[in-house]
Length: 287
Length: 166
Image (cartoon, rainbow over all chains, first blue to last red; front, side, top):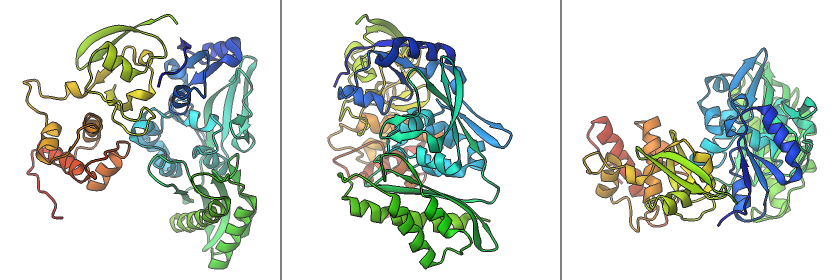
């Protein structure tokens, strides 16, 4: 399988990358890890005339702490995320999620920025970023702006990115010490997208849930924040009746596609189960 | 489309060639460099038969353009034997433990196991299985591949390999 012809560009700075993308217009695509785009190009489902490879842009790499936030450069790979002590200490849910993405080879190349920017409803990081209250830095020819993850996703492969704009970094507020977290993903095999997945970040006080955020992956055209489900567990000790109520509230906002992963009813049903399991496991980890 | 001049180090030797930007790295290795040990299995990033080691990473060479590997340091299965031509610990492990039947997945398995053992010289069975989860074998059921990697780990660490009772 051979992709269609294209011109290859390898800028060294964000400014040059943005300049190329805006000058070349619709026929140009940024190339991050390439593990979504290159397979699409081989199938000729994508035939960009220009590829702007971001691997030469040093400014897009790295993980750093900025006050109470962790800032992750868009070209940071899943493998680098897993190797980072800072992430392991401050945002362990990122490690748990990254390990459920694809396989080791793909994680050496696949980037966090590509995962969140592509708008693929099957990607795992977007729902997680919404759950964590992250924001994305977008750089365009006329300057930069910050967009909340919760306002970034508009439809399958449709995002707030304007033509010529590049997602350069992800900024994540560090959850409080002692928070509980879990990412529960049901998949058919290693490397598969989620049949259903749920992210939970919560804090407990006196055996009861004090704060809670719940995100859902691959259960709609966009990642979802299950706000009613999260509200339903506040002030409870996550007793069985509350867990069922939260699952039902989450299922009410799911609208998955019927596909090889199962019919709509099944995917919503297991989506509710992922929410319950993630809540329980997160609570078990909270201190 | 104009061809690009590419230079890279493959198994310690400087090589060069011309390739269109759309040329996949695996095609460049097999066709331009005439090194056919790296296999093309699924060509869809699933099977891992095309795995090579690039700058210390296991990469599926069907999902990267040759032009992206310009200037990099690559090891393929052809570079895995010891300097005197004898089998490396991993190759010996696959031979001794019957870690292959048809052998099609073996170059990718060995290249992936090579990096796994560099990063984690004493992996548990579970770590080996997760470590090779991006490589598919349709013959062995993986049991003997896991043993082959355990054999190699023991040999590299200079300890006696004890086969687990089944």
